[in-house]
Image (cartoon, rainbow, N blue to C red; front, side, top):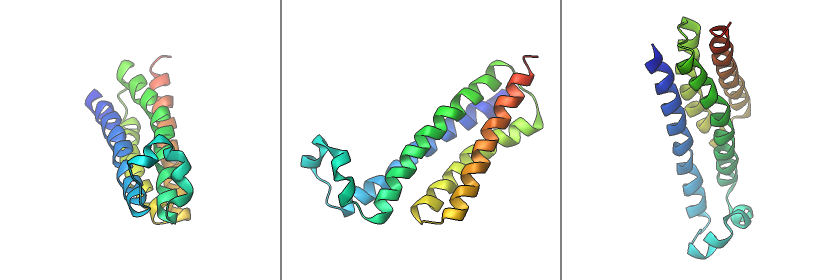
Length: 134
């Protein structure tokens, strides 16, 4: 059972790392070079539209993992054993993967729904983990 939370954490980190790919593609298309490495954030205005969205998406992926990782660890530590927690744990990395596509391809409604559902999944993990402490 606990392996589910470890996999959720690992896959969610993998999604964060995966979000680097569209970011890199956007930078390459804009002519990113070694000289830009001294101030990569100043290069932001040179990025194409999808490259800018890729930057925002990557930043949001980091924010998401900062919330999701403690929830997974809480469930691991408290030996959470509920079906809803398992569903939430598996859904988060899947949703975050879909989120990247919705963000890069500029589908705001899908992006918003996916984001909200992913946050809800993380909140469920916190709730289920904390329930084990009572």
